[in-house]
Image 1 (cartoon, rainbow, N blue to C red):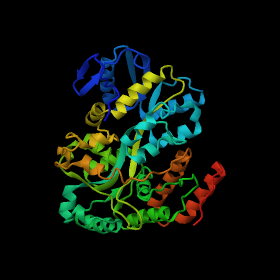
Image 2 (tube, rainbow, N blue to C red):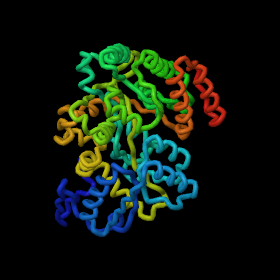
Image 3 (tube, helix red, strand yellow):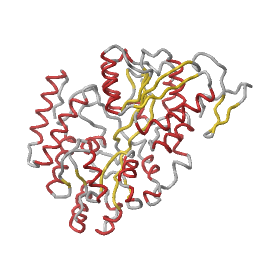
Image 4 (cartoon, helix red, strand yellow):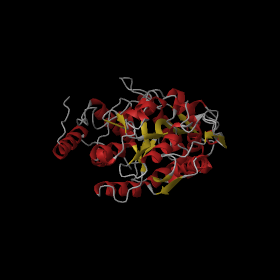
Length: 429
C-alpha cells in the first residue's frame, strides 16, 4: 500500500518506532497548525500518531483536544448552528451522527473525496465507506468499526453443557438460553438502556428504521419479527429485566448474571476494563440467524473524522488524517493503544491483529470479527435517526416490562409521528 508520507526523493528517510515515514520538503500542507477533537480511547493513538507526523514534518503542529463524547457532539451541534463558531479544523464523530450532521449541514463540511480521498476508498470495507459519503463523495475518514459478535461466559455455558457451536440460529439461542437459565440461573441477555439489540437484528438484513431511499420502514416484516423475538425472550425468562443504564449493564455482566450478549467488537475493551477479574472466562461466537435472508454479521457503532470548511489549514488537516487513517503504522497504534477495531483492511494481515487474546483464553477475537467485515450490510441512518432512536428506546423499554404490548400498533404510531415531523413516506406492507 502506498504510504502517504513516503517520498522517494533523495531527501532521506526518517525512521520511527512504528515504521518508516519520509521527510517531505516543507510546503503547504505540511506546516502550520491544526486542531482535532476526539474522545477518550482515541486520544492516546492520535497523540502518538501526531508525534510521528510532526517528527517527519517539524513545521507542522497537530493539536489533539480531548472531549467527552456527549460534550463533543453538543459542541459540534452548537458550532454548526453558529456557522462554525468555536469549531476545530476536524473532529471525530460516530457514523450515525455523521449522517445527521452532514445531511443537515452539508456546506459546513469539506468534501475530502474531491481532495483525493475518493481514490482510497477501496482500502476500507464497503459498508464503512458507503456510510460516510454525501452525494457519492467521501466526506469522512474511516477510523474504527463495530462488527458484532456474541460475547459469552465460558463457565456458565460449560456448566449447562452448552457449546457455542450449537447456537446457529436465533431459535437455537432461545432453546439453549432456556437450558442455561434452568441449570445455572443465568440470563442470556438483559437491560433496557437502548434499542441496540433490535438494531443489530435489523442490521443482519441491511435494514434500519429507514430504507435506502429514506422512507420510514419501521413496519417492515423484519422489524416486527425482531421486536416479537425480543418479546419471546422476555416471556421465556432468559432476558433479564432491569432499569436502563450502562453501569447497570456492566455490573450484571461482571457479576456473571448475564452470560451472553451481542455487541460490537469494541465491547471487548469494555469487558476487560469493567470486569478484569473475569479474565479467561470470556469467548465470542458469530451472530445466529433466522435463515430467511439475514446474515451472521451486523455492525454496531464505529466512528470517522470529518473536516469543517471553516478550517484555516485544510491541507495540513487532510494530510494528517489521511496519514492516520490509511497508513498501517498509526492504525496499529490505534488498535494496540486504543483497542479500536481498524477499518483499514491491511491491518487484518498483521501478526499483532491475529494474535490470541489472554483475556479471552487465547481466542483470536479480532480475527473472528474481521471474518464478518465484508458481509456487513450498509444501513441508512438519515438526519432523523436520533429522534427516531428516542422513540424506539421508549418502545423497547416498555415492551420489556410489558411484553403483551401491541407491537404493530405502536410501530404504526411512531411511523405516523415521524411522517408528520419529517414529511417522509411510510412504507406499506
